[in-house]
Image 1 (tube, rainbow, N blue to C red):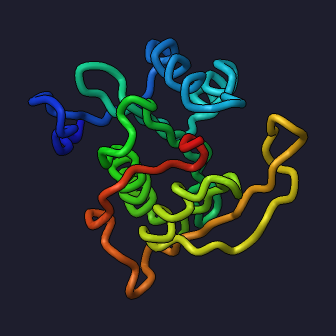
Image 2: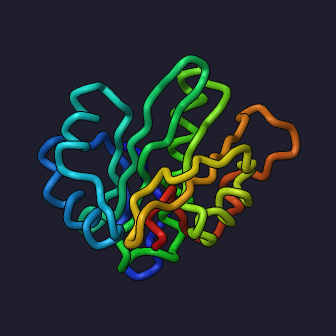
Length: 178
């Protein structure tokens, strides 16, 4: 387990560890609070069964999580979410840093993600962390009225001049800043 910085509100140390099936009730409680169109429990079960990289951030309780899928020379971030009550304290940045660490440990040179076009807060965070907007997937996400486009973002991990992850101060995630 990795010890992370305090959440700023308590003396509890935060740890990051692999997501387990036993975590899914707490994961789902966050997921349905954070999203208008949350993943189903089956999406998480399937991701764990498929061997996708999945970790949780835990303090006094579960604070956030990510799920990523390894591909050929890439890691695709599928979901990264921080509990709404814990947002804005750098936990999303910590989770994104963990994604980058995992990609580097697997010698994967690129991280990809999709983010709702309307999620300006997350897009700004990703840009600060060195992600580039490289495409658009029309009608990718379900929305209250119809569908919403996704902005495709990419970060090369060996890119010169990319800002260090530790410099980010606000949280973010692929889609949980609605």
